[in-house]
Image (cartoon, rainbow over all chains, first blue to last red; front, side):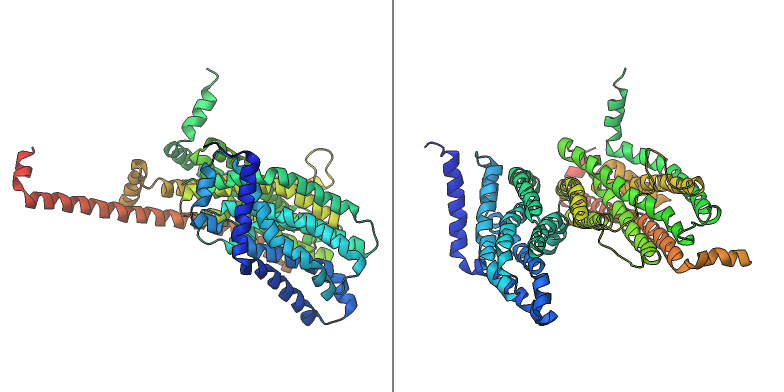
Length: 228
Length: 252
Length: 76
């Protein structure tokens, strides 16, 4: 039996995780439902004035998406830890960082992508001007993978512990501040008719860095957390 | 001949040796901390003249600024020993990194509270979202994250290594947060003390500040040694040297 | 006496200056006391563990002696 190539292993990893996610479709819908509920609560709490909602729409949507992702982050590796497949992955001959990258990609596709798809709906609920929606989507497309990558490192660090939900939020908060600032900054700039390319470029630069470094850090963190 | 320093360091990193070494140095560090602290308090609260703009409220600077420096200094120490702990797997480095975290969190907390007590009469607000304040708050959360992660593991050493990794991630994060919040907004007086170049504050106000900085440094050494000794006792509970100490303590 | 009052008044900023110093000292004292308490707890736990171990060893030795007296008489 020959060892499958790297590309084949990556594809198999991705297919496995997507299949597993598809079998539990209800879990995918949860963050989306959560984001809808939170966004719905804001007009009730703040009053239905268009100008106020318009002004806060970008920030509210970004924070809501962040919280929804945080909700799903906890389960990124939990089933793999339980059934022992994560330990097998650590022992596998394929580079662990690459496999982690694939797992993060699968997780992003199943949790963040649905949120990005419903983002225009959330924007409409808060009366965000239609002209700003493309910028919002662009900012989300860059910020959500960044959050997934950063979150994955932290989830890997807590893989050896029992309960980690609140701890994960505590650890992610300092790391996600820059992403939130630049993503919300881009939307706010677009709303005021200012050039928004600079914050988006910063987000892109951070994402490129994270794509290279985060899977490596994730693999190292996993080795520490599972090294019993 | 010339390799006595690495040899000495190697010997020092063995827990019983470090326990004795820290036990000898700790009272001296504490005494120096109290001495410099009293000098700084007398100089800062009594001798130093009132500021012509801020009146007596500026006297908070004598604790606020040294604590702010310490909050970063302690994080740097934690980062370096985390790196040593992860690369060379030295138990003492893990202990130093993990026992630095609560001290650093204490200094960060003092910085935030005294800063807001100073900000209220000076800017008319307890809190403002400027780069330095926000970075300090993020630093507090980083410290809390490290402490939380360390305690969430059942195996202490494994927890220490995971938390050390988090501390290293935080070191990269702090400048990024500072830059991004700076980009976002600003409302703060420029920094008044520069390490290099002419300082803008009068000598009568500067020397108590420097004395308090020394006092906090010595306090950190004393507190770290104290905590590290207790942690070593807890970690090495099964070893003979710790049992000896437990018996000696009971006889007293 | 009036100079002491002037000192305590801190030019009208007493309600900001003194709480700041109080926080400084309370936090640092707590930081010093906490490890001392932990040290006492750690050593006490260790002593109970040692006492338990010693009594268990004692018991197993006497049990052994009760079960087969030849063993104890044979061993010097």
